[in-house]
Length: 106
Image 1: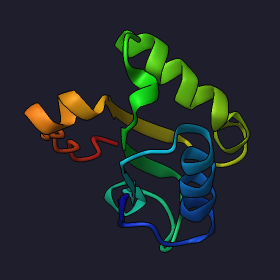
Image 2: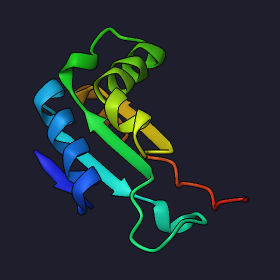
Image 3: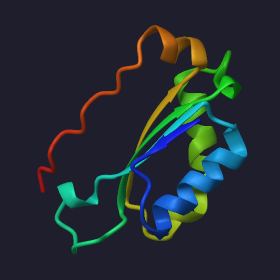
């Protein structure tokens, strides 16, 4: 499994939970807090790229609900924003592109 960009306590927790729940073949947990108006070293805004066969047959909304359910504690306790990009292995193999995150407008 590929796992890049993970650093910090919250990022590690997110990575561990997603790994335990989804057995991903590819996982990126990217702290994008520095792109927003928050104190240095914050862990409040994340992008998650998750590739798992558990997403086979599930629509995008169902995939996102699963991720949100497994990260409910983090979302209720400090994680302000979570950009979720979920793929099956076939989808990832066919087109492994994740959109860039826009700059903060606040």
